[in-house]
Length: 470
Image 1: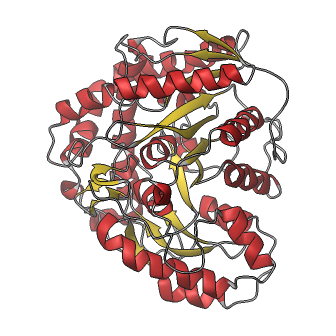
Image 2 (image 1 turned 135 degrees about the vertical axis):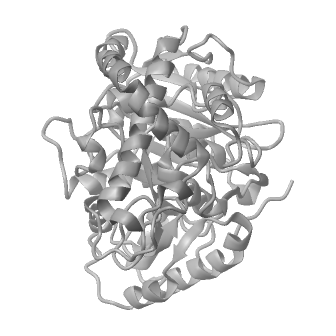
């Protein structure tokens, strides 16, 4: 087992984004020094983890020397943007060989929002699965993005590169987005904190045009306070009047919660033994803190999985249409992976039944909301088993086998994408093979503050293991 990290390179040590920004503000570290250190770390780690699609180091150093207002929550902190979103001056390859390498003229609204919220300095674009469709970082376009905890295993995805870079210590936080678990899944695999916010916390993205707006943006990071500070900073620039404000969450609430716990999939299959142990330990910890624990069956039926997969087929079909719309004949769909092409080809035959699938998926909003008439929080694994070996979701794996593997892996994250509810993955376990295991805490729509409060309490008594302490 080979592990790699960069915490012993340069002046950033193992600082989180909040501490890095504080040191920059106090002039203990300059922006230039922080960026130069992150570049040195990237140069060391990336040949091993393959997480950077397009580096932008020279421009980052130039930007570090410019005058800034220091208004952002992570002012001067180096970071990366996931390569599904446009960052001016760099191409957006979407993890696909079929997408032409054409530099973008402007930031998309989500990236513009991130830069305003954080005042951070972008070092480049981080890797993703093709169109963000799979929970890995294995593509024909980029090759394999590897997990710093064990280079033979997956980072999870689709925010693969961002998670790998943060886990390895290259940067303290990085942009991620989540349409089926793509913040929480790599956070779980790489031992990070990943909060998927409620639908509507961000400015609108292209997914808002879809029948179900599943995708939201956020960050992966190494501390609860970084997640809390990011979303507090977001509210200084953008608020949704239909959602309660998160506010500045800095500590835990003394109110005790009723927490429902489950570990089985929608098909009543138990999770991997190490994952079950980690979940039970998390439940026991919460109970020791005075929270009320109740074990329940998975509240979702297997029909949900089938409907979600059908909708995923629509998204694959839509992703290819969007690339045609952007690039015309410069886009070559024949260079997409087999999984993407097969899923997209299947959609025209599924278009009529998919109408009923979408209708059923939307009905889960009410079912999900009703759970919180009885419980405050749902506690489950983030994933059914620890990070799989590289190749588990590789481009050469047959489509039916990929679908089978998805059904035994991603069982706990997709519900919140359909309902628009928040959920956070916390690094609270370790497999016998020494791979991180994430535990998911989920709440009702608009209740990020409740999750962050509980996360602060858990972090206080259950110090999250860092790769440099491994």
